[in-house]
Image (cartoon, rainbow, N blue to C red; front, side, top):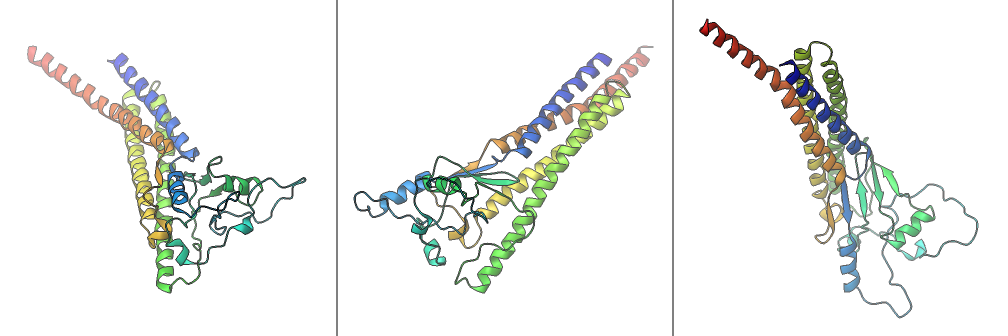
Length: 295
């Protein structure tokens, strides 16, 4: 019985360590959600009026939605080839955004802490990043800030946008907070599971199982809240600012897959640790009762 209990402890400890590694990978990487508008941009270019021979088509690339740097770094030598930002008209207001092909959509990937642009997909954006005009990555805010302001927006719509920002802020805080607690409790569970090899094997194994199950609850809340925040963000009002066109490819990426795999390992290790002491105790009681009846 002692050898079997040690085997169960070792198996649950291995599962919990794998879960901890996957959970830390998900926490520290930025590939939770990705967008790829290349198919959408190709369709817009096909529907647009062809430019004169030898000229590039004018492109609406508004600068206000992009993360501009405060100071432009000076570089020696001639500037790199690329379209001048002055060629791109500024965003005049809501009327332009109501056109499906006028919105500034870029290939991005985002995590819990940062949102970044993919390089090598959009030459215009690559030129801006290379010249230091636009930051490639921006921090995801966990404090309230005023949303992007556009001219000619009604007051009721402005209040709606601010309320949606508050709701999204709470969802982000819940996601990050519960996932951080899950990592901390999982680490404590791994320590208790390691102690079970040397002291009070039955008690520490049971406590480690309960900690693993608590971690699974925290992780489930965090992942479900993140999915709710993504769905809420894509269905905000006005839809022509925050929702994505149908031909823009978007979805979850490998970081959140690591988090779900970690949840599976956590639940498996927790059930193994928490259930085995009861099963072994039940077997011992049955053996004692059978021995007493035979006597």
